[in-house]
Image (cartoon, rainbow, N blue to C red; front, top):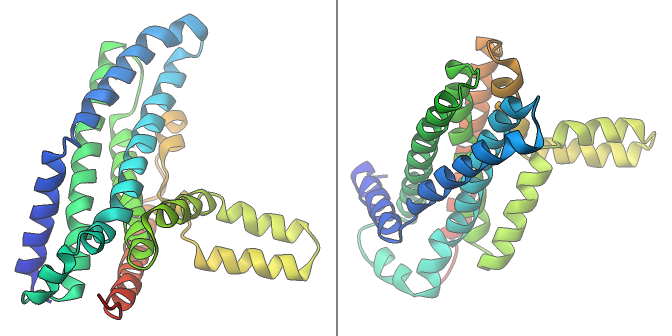
Length: 259
């Protein structure tokens, strides 16, 4: 794999998304935070600070998740539908470089979105004099980027062999199931059925455990309490390993497609 070609593809993906005004989402996020800062005290006089902390991180997660899923599933599919993939593979560019470049480009876009949104979020917390832990919020933002990168890998994997609509549906399903995989295991144990327990354990092994990359609650309710450093490092490794594994699957499928 030629990393220079990978970076060129990633740069093109980034520039294309900037031209498509994807960064305007940052302005939308700032607007909804401004509205929330003004409206929340009207509904929750005693808990508005916690609600705003939770709302800001939750909105950031939802907005960027939508971007990751809808853009991720179309990264390769769009090239196939427009037949521009024929031009790309005719050049000295391998299919693995296309997958890696598309993934890297969208991951950088998502990282930029989360970084700028986090700065805006912290600014609103200062304006509203809302107690918060900057370190906890920054760590939660870093793990959100890791989670979004993993979801991007899921979206690309589905996008290389299904239609865009089906890929979006499946990626959303993986996201929802991935956030409750530990609960699925517990549900299987409570069912007292060996068959159901095997199914839930199988789902736990196959689906990514996205709860390991979700630190919103630690940032909102933990304030100065952070997970153990060893746990954080292990979860980072888990997210990176899962992303690489999914990209390997995407490359395997994509390399065997005929155009």
